[in-house]
Length: 327
Image (tube, rainbow, N blue to C red; front, side, top):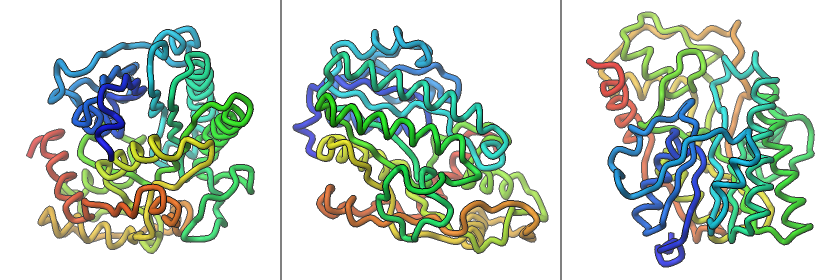
């Protein structure tokens, strides 16, 4: 990104102690931004920001409270809203109401607070779960009202759809500069383990390195996911915030999807563990193929390509496992 654009800007990051937010914090500080973090520490931790000690301001609070959102937005040039409950399929598919309520109310509160404060930019981090199960693949930036959101993550998908609609309305009615990003499966080594709520990459890494044998994997193993390392993802979020605050969505992902079976094989190769793997087709596997059409993203970002490959990313995840759980 253009460091000059971010230098000295007052940036508020909600969820900055979380998985994706903590990677973003490192990039913002390196770009010279004056950063404030707001987080309730429900799924994030200040340990994720240990390397940035003294270089940001931290405020703890609940974004479900509108007055708190108004307070933290005042004086911010840029508001980057990464807060949210984003869990793995096994949990999300049984807690649609929880996912809808918590994500929708925090997004709506933050959008209104940023509108009132007249921020120069607002970043809404949406999700690929807004797309329907029968969406074409690779998936272009379809209208948010098209079909039903991904059904195993329906509550989460509806919350993000509502937020996208509000962001679009605010852009058209008030001229609010809003960027809308739809990430596809980011992963990385700052993940906070949460048992049944965890996502596919950390779950598979943990189970294989825990020594499970056999390892039972949900679905056929043929289902494919568009994995993007969090470092690349947040660099793209910064570029989109700077260059595409037009109230229209853009995918954060590439047409470089990998099968779950190949992901398992890569984890085994990197970790040196070789358990028997059983694919349980009686369990749900979600949408068969999730893969972004990156044409618009490449146009906005001058052809940015991911810098961290899957093998390097899995090596980082193995390091995450040893830091988190010991050897």
